[in-house]
Length: 194
Picture 1 (cartoon, rainbow, N blue to C red):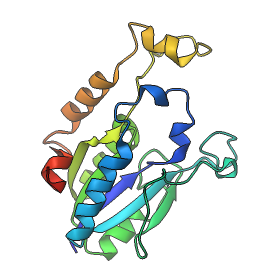
Picture 2: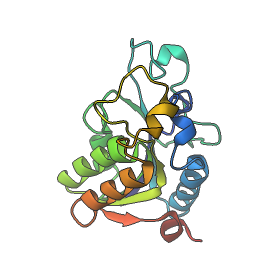
Picture 3: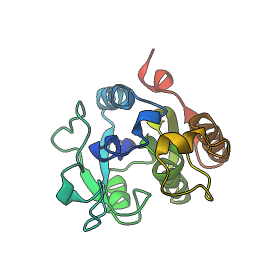
Picture 4: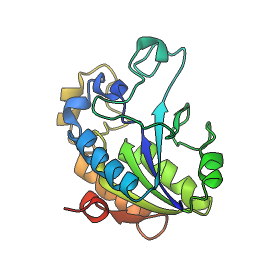
């Protein structure tokens, strides 16, 4: 086994946030499941990662009950399920140890927050010497309000602000930054079949 699929933060926490209705990939579970099915068929390791912020009182606080995989995703016996407290999946976990212990050299990255958790994991994986496939259409993100936007506005109003970075721009910028430097940009159809 020299390849692994890393599924990052496809968890119920995100569905609870006010920006979820503006998500770039509403069928993230379906897309991830296609990759999982293909990875398992090729005997690749599947690693599940959940983001947590214990004690925060937010949707990412395990005490709230939302830090769980979205419905329709189910790890099999032997597939690691790890939790992280950083944006990337390496810094606060034993992910590197898991991957090297399984002889993994190539990663496929998918999950939630295209430009944040998925991108930072990809960059660190590349720095650690892994070859990385970044599957953009199996990632999801939401618009990013301008840093000077009022914090107390409903998210729907922030989306209408012309300074807000829309999901298409977020995705394009992420691909531009990663392509051929940190990762190969791939699609679900390429990796799992049409």
